Amino acid sequence: MPTHFLRTLTLQLAFLVALSLAPRSATAQTPDPIAALQAAAVEARAADWGHWGPDPDSYSSWRSHSNRLIPVYSFGMDMKSVSGENSVYRDAAAIERLYGQVPDGTLNPAAEYFDQTDVYRLQKSAAEAGKKRVILFVFDGMDWHTTRAAAIAKLGKVAYSEGRGEGLAFLDYRGAKTDYGYFVTSPHNDGTSVSVDKQRVTNPGGKLRGGYDFQRCGDAPWKPITDADYPIGKSKEQPHAYTDSASSATSLTAGIKTYNNSVNVDAMGREVLPIARTLQEDGFAVGVVTSVPISHATPACAYANNVHRNDYQDITRDQLGRPSIYHPGGLPGLDVLIGCGWGIDTEKDGGQGKNFVPGNKYLTEEDLKAIDVANGGKYVIAQRTPGSEGPEVLSAAVAKAIADKNRLFGYFGVGGGHLPYQTADGKYDPVDSIGGSKVQKAEVYSEADVSENINLRQMAVAAMEVLDSRSDRWWLMVESGDVDWASHSNNIDNAIGAVHSGDDAFEGVVKWIEENGGWEDTALFLTSDHGHYFQLTQPEALAKTAPTP
Image 1 (tube, rainbow, N blue to C red):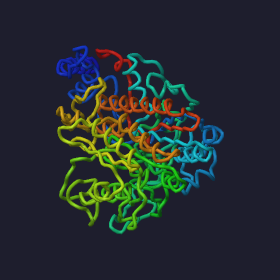
Image 2: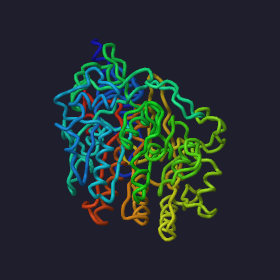
Image 3: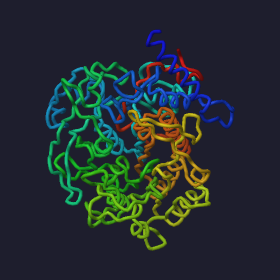
């Protein structure tokens, strides 16, 4: 019997078993097909419809980021100033200013794409043009391929194979001037070593430099990859580093290329200022909301400085205006910070240096007490409270912060440090993940885990309400961080669910804007910090309840 036939039969049997065991929909009482696809792929270690990584015969052959081009969508203004003929990748001198050199294969005289650092420049241009509300919406880890998968699942059909696409709110919205493009995320370098205690870079330049070879990875996100190992920095002929979330977020918020793990520190270890701080100096209120821990890489880069992204407690101190290892005198602090990390306690954490305080991994008890208005601090605190509905806790804190002209800090989450994972069917019932050959058991949530928490849409709307009460000019980062977590776990069900929950938050943001002055004074940039390596080989499988033979 042919090997291909046996493999297909094995995958179909695994799917049927998984389908019978998949979570049931509360509305239709039918099996959840995407959960079943995920479960079958984990069981068989392979899937005809797609895979993560360069090996098509393995469902999971890569669990980290990639060097793929990343889409960006603008609302309220266009992106012509940085794209096409204005692309930095058409200019060797401009490329050298970015990377400190002109990496091999990176100059492209016909580039339509631009650089991740240009998103910083677009935000800066928006504020300089008089926009009073600037929003950076980051779906951490969401590339064009993940976006398309989520759109197919939502539409129930395959509607596009290139371009901007359709099927999600941020793809379809036309209530404001909108534009679409894509950019390079490659860092300055990977392999830089640092001292967290001394806040010092010890080997500037690292081990592997960045760059982008469009002939190997494509000049558009949907173009074929000709060197399968190139996107993951393992090309035998021309390796370029791929980014982590800290380096890429620094590019988005501070406009520079830097080393992986840097939080607003350049390749030599020098401080750079994120746009939130420069706008704050000009009278803007500033805020951050995230579905993952408050001081993880992306929200950290919105405001803090640190030589390493894992120095969580010190990064939180920067965010909340407390004395930190980088800023002993303290920064002014964010006006609004809402995210996760609640209940995540640990006795040791070598990555945080000698000043780590046992207890909550992201926020010390001393700092929490010091910022509380009840103790003379500046923040009204809303945190997960046993027995209380999360939305009610947040709503009460928003009302108090606005009435008393205070700042707002929200702290929620479940055991993993994030909001409960929403799956593709809209429920909170994930199935197993896989990394390489190792199965990762699915998280299981209690009723309290769901009811005592909030969602990203509620976070974003709460932030806008408080920011708007503090200034008629404000900047906000909204991060849907769980797209990245799902993708690291090679879980298509969680990844699609995370995109959908982020898309719902976008709808909430748009609704608020339309009801509060409209788009004339608003610019919103929606993007990701990097991609992964998901390859959807049979897209119709995500639109059907049974596998395609």
